Length: 561
Ligand SMILES: [Zn+2]
Ligand SMILES: [Zn+2]
Image (cartoon, rainbow, N blue to C red; front, side, top):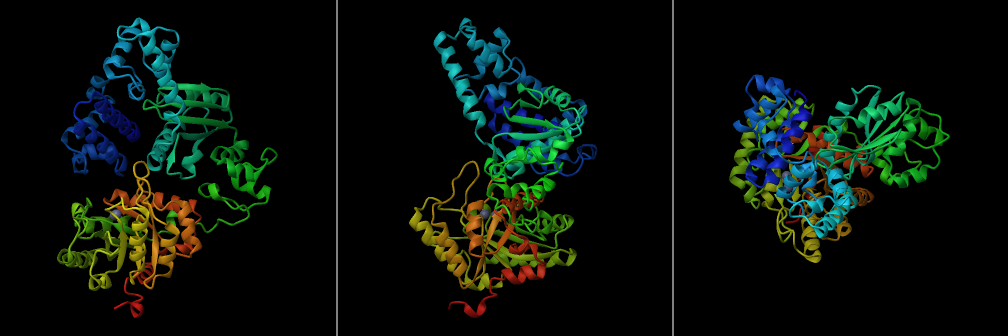
């Protein structure tokens, strides 16, 4: 099995099954981490295996390396097979149904041959469950309700992270585009619009024979089951329950279908009737309708008639900002980070490790910061990329920034972020941020509202007031658009509010390892959703211009005593 995506999928399945079996949770997490690590490596797996270098990848130990080798060379995994033994094929999805445990699933598989959610629903509807020991009529009815609830609510809830969804879509595209009658496959829907969470993966297949193409897609071995299918579309479920909607169209209908399947509805309503358009591509259709083209990410809040030609692109970004190293909680050294950034074509990188208050993350004190500067100076002599000396300083509970003024002045870049005391009430939090924004040095407000896409709501504060304070601050400042796929912070509506105040932006990677420099992709998508133009992005400028714009002491004359 030489397909990286397929190996990653198997590793994830092993992690999920270990979790369901309830044995060693540490081991389950190790497999999940290993899957992510393999996904993030850029080198061919074959080469890594041949040169015995899998174990050099952080997060991959000897046991995991052996599993990956086994999958790669034999296409199978004894561990996976032993975990699946005696269980329904869709065990991962089935175990998400309330009221049914592993033991019950095993019995149902043994006695009724239940493999999928469909099998389970049918058995319950036909009253066959009650014939199994341990199940009665009452339990059968309850289970049917749970299945309904799962299908109507849980399975439709947007829960696919942007980064995971895009990589899943890529691997499905690789697999589906080689099928007979399939000319091309592309991602559409909310993933194409760069939404932080999606309920499903939407794909568009272009084919001279859409019906035959759909028939081929419906037989894909990746699908655990096909929920429905007709001449132009089908809905698949992957083994983990992820829904994949596939539409097919002819080449002459491609432009219209790309617009329709990308959505969102509000934008389609604004565009009006597309049925009489003749163009085969999206740009042509917008032209026919008399509007400038709107890129997919901007469609959610598009103003028809406005030009989006100068929206910031990933290629515009010339410097990686917000990078951690082994000096705090990063996995790679300053030199490794700098060389990785250089390889990606950047002209500068900011090393911004944590400040002392973030002791749990190895935050630096003044002494260590100075030693870090020495190391940066040494590395700078060996690399071409410009390395800026920075900090990600904590905004303390009272709004002070976690460095003495004399240190702030000597730094090249200051990112100011909240990492602790998230639970202050709105008033306290607003005052804390107002004070931080008013500090008379230039600061970049890091992951501003501290939200985590799946698990932490934005901090409570009066955002517009804080933005006003930053805009009026004697030191000045910029807003970070954080591309960590779990953060994606600040949200588009607040980015728009910052744009109204003419605040500049920094598209940051918040990288704790070399692969995470790739987060620039997600930061860019988020910025484009909010309509951010290239001219508004500080790290789309040259190294010199960026350094000048963000220099903390640049407004020295107006510094408070
Ligand atoms: Zn941070
Ligand atoms: Zn950080």
